[in-house]
Image 1 (cartoon, rainbow, N blue to C red):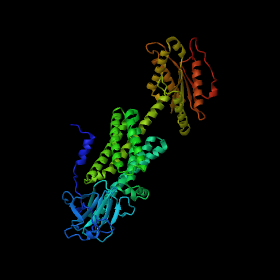
Image 2 (image 1 turned 180 degrees about the vertical axis):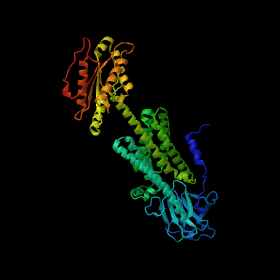
Image 3 (image 1 turned 90 degrees about the horizontal axis):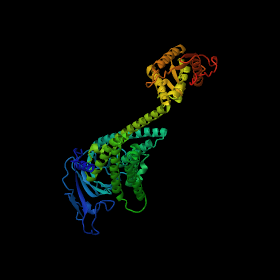
Image 4 (image 1 turned 30 degrees about the horizontal axis):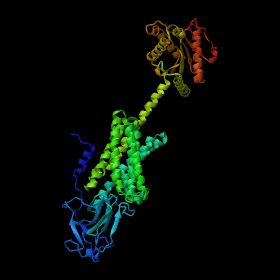
Length: 584
């Protein structure tokens, strides 16, 4: 039986936690006002005033409050070493055992505002994740309330969107757990920030939009994690975000989602491979969230509690479309769609699982709790590898285009621009290192006669045959170029004049023997070759000109010859007279 992603995620979310919470057992009773309207002498709830009312002071030794309130046990007995789940309302908490320096901990408070009264005549203490004056010696993974002793404590919760876990632990135990929390979180933060900044530098150099989208997406995802964990509000550069409260987290999460959609469209090439799904993604993941953010910003409607549920629904629907599009794009040849799926699916699963667990009030298992920042770091690294692969792919395509631009389409050897570029580097090397350099100028004898008698198709075959003989037999394929027509040049790095003359003679003999018959036609192709050694004052143009003059000297001697060239003025410019019906 096949299960969809929704079924799998729902099944994962329903799994019971496999690990016990290490902490002191607490007993929690819910306190609810009586249904009928209270009289003036009654105190409705524990926090109707700045202090506990007279009615709460008169509670009995059994822990029952006066007639103004009624106690209700939390459904199910609290098991040892497990946290208790509470929600909005007023609660009476009794630590079950004595602990040194006990702390009351409200885990993962998100947008909840928690008020704690540790003594009937004491002052209530109200804290939330967004407060700037929280104790700096603790992280914000939990709201921390020091307890004066083992007596009952009264807790009021307002504005909680998810059930809260409450435990009582010793200060030393919480400090150890808190340190581990900070180490894991900062490790993930360092990885994401480091990779994102490196990619941002690549964008500054290359100006490719996908690098900017990557950096913005990863940094916004990281900012969302830091805000949802509360640690952003402890950092001086981000503390101002606390002013916006939970709506600020909603905005950051929405912007992060929108930036990721933009990243997938470019990174995975979805517009090219799946244009219709790409258009759907743009509508669902870019334009619709933009409308939601606009509605969040305007005064109407006044109640904004609808936003998280609607935004989450849009987010999940967009990701379904995105995963379908990336899967199809992968099958159609987009390698980077595969990178995107490998990077995004684990983060999507861990985010959804964590949200389901929190909404059920289930205990956040450590690897789920810390899985979000760690999997985000994994996502950043995998996507960065995909960007490196993307850069390598573009480099190969650029090199291939450059190679095609430098190659002669007919013979496959370098064209004039390509061979002059190679020769320019060889001349520079000659000047810098003093390495010998020579040039052969090869011109086929009576080539026009071959074209006129047998046609240009056979003439082209002769050119290919000559290029093949020189390239394959003498292994000079990367130094052989066609200047145009039937003219070739061969760059001989490391060869002086005598060595070049010997090589030229071998080339001449090989052409004469191997190209006597081309495509079963006895064409008798021969070549006249001029040899010139590079002199200190030579440029590319002067070296080619001297080799050209030597080639004309070979033709003047009757063709199928090798001629040496000294200085340019040694041999005057000469236009040989070709036999009747032929060209030199």
